[in-house]
Image (cartoon, rainbow, N blue to C red; front, side, top):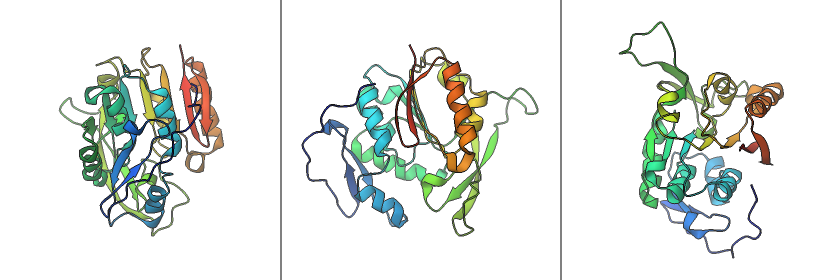
Length: 253
């Protein structure tokens, strides 16, 4: 994947008491407005004001997504990446999963501000489970909520302070095959705060999947787990096209 050769001419960013606009690197049509809210911690507000929130992922998505892609995102966050994808591919081509139920109203407001409406699930994507549950029961898993929403995860981070933890929610699991094989998903975007280590051990990735943007979290899962994850992607035929910090762009033919 080639990065844009030149950045667009800097423009004045729109900031209101209620929202802020995050600028795309080259295409102003991919600028995304996000709500500013009183619950946001100072570190989150600063990232938004500095336009550094998901900067690497935004650049990779802007350069790597094509209008014909079918995209699945794991870890919606504020809804910025899925809103960009919906702008590029259309609402019907984008499905996104967010585990934290407290983020759903914020994500919907991001979508409203940007005139998009991709398919949003308050759930986790996971493999099919073969036993121990009737067909009418839905699997659920715990999600540990952090005061900085972007650190909430299905994995307990050993670096958390007691004051960081703001609760636990039980969240339903959606079977991955019902998403990946319903349509020919071509791109996967993943930022799930350490959950990637266990998820990709069991996830059955379809042959139609050609591109992955993933943020890894060595602070949570350790460097060895990150190395194993990359080796697993190599074994599936993916090549590492570009990196930015802990964010990878992988592709296969």
